[in-house]
Image 1 (cartoon, rainbow over the protein chains, first blue to last red):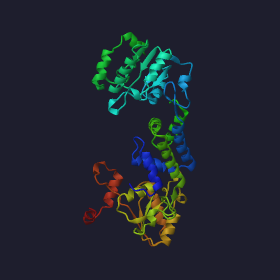
Image 2: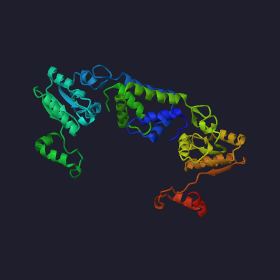
Image 3: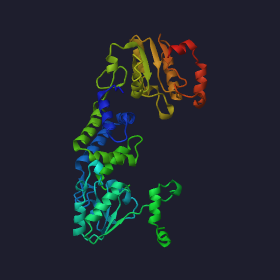
Image 4: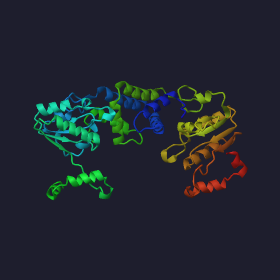
Length: 206
Length: 206
């Protein structure tokens, strides 16, 4: 694609570096910004730069935060005896949006994945063990994605916490509400039969 | 959606102002930028701001340009006696990418659309008439989208140029290569029959 302007070509190239944005979409975004007021575009660019420059990570849970300790960890109305272990900030947002969970979080920053060169040392596992030892944590809920890497990470963490008197649970895996049995993969279906619940418990969840 | 950080929320909101980008996509883009180096993100923001601040419009054809007159208008190897009238810069890029057109352009900046409050005075029609009068323009190719607004604009411009000895043509409309007759809309099919070509001309275009 030939551009009539180097300025536009540079801006398009910057946008194509973002995930899921190709040349055509990038050009559409750039042309949109061209039509906007200069002030609006300055606001856009500066907000994005400020976000990257000023962002911090919570010293306790490693979630992104505007302050040294994040608003969730500072919230005294939350139950500090339960930690929900997640991979990244996006999972925290997803769980927070359910409005069902009132404990704290611990963001690992990833999962163990030898193929990507990510070992336990690259994750915030040591600080999780420290929190369990120092704070009075009674339960750890593993809310990792149901993948090989997620399961490996859960296994590793549970071994590291073997000597601690903390209860380790995992979020339930099974057929999603609205899902149809015949389209569910075999592994999920097999697991959901193996981990079947007494009907009374099932009713309780409704 | 609740965000753990105001900085992230602001950045997500800025991205959602772009066309076709919703909250989830915006969050994905922001999280991608969070993982990048601060310098990379500064480069992104500054390039976009610079693009908007420094962009100019060619004094002759009104296409976007880095200089007072754009590189196409300055190119002496191009045929200045033919003007291709287009709606915006994107159409210029599309036609340039065919590598078939060697004339100059005239960017209207839109089409006449009473419903959007766009009249002839909001478009670069006067300067087009000036160019036809002053420069030795022999042919004007109307390359506007085949819509009601496009056709209205062509009609208006052709009336304005009635007294000039300039040939006015329109790009051919018909069945696209690879298109199947049965899926083509009636208007296009009817027009392509009405504007049928002698077979010799058809062969010439292959």
